[in-house]
Amino acid sequence: MSDDLAARLREQGLRLTPQRRLILQAVEELRHATPDEVLAHVRSRVSSVNASTVYRTLEVLEELGLVRHTHLSDRAPTYHSTSEHEHVHVVCRRCHVVRSYDPAVVAPLVAALGADGFVVDVGHLAVFGECADCAAQAPPDTPT
Image 1 (tube, rainbow, N blue to C red):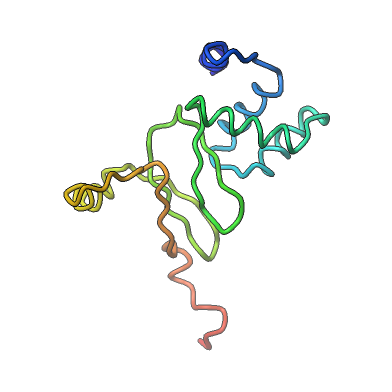
Image 2 (image 1 turned 135 degrees about the horizontal axis):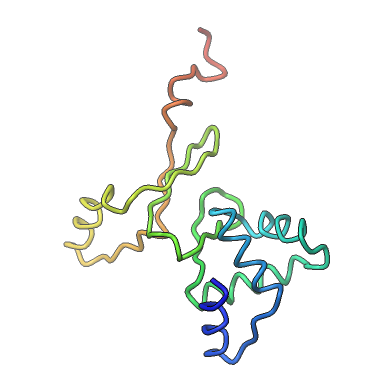
């Protein structure tokens, strides 16, 4: 991780700072995290990091291709490391669990859209619904 980060930063004329290393490490450890979640994780190790540093660093890391983001809620974007295999995000609207699936799951959709000239960014794709556990439960306002 840090060798790749250091090399990519040098290519852009930037330095590998302890904050950049910690922020990338936090994204990798958390797997899917908002900037606030990354900040809390980093602050558990180094209290002097501020929110603007996290936001700016996430932008730099995304420009370098080391992280990417998707929108898994109506909140801030959620970041994940590009060192993981490309995946589709599936989000339960009730319990908010996020699961990752191989892009082959959406291959027919990608192919159909591709036939129409549209190129899908699978890593940015998020599908919302209910997980099996939540679907098995009666809705909270429905009498049983």
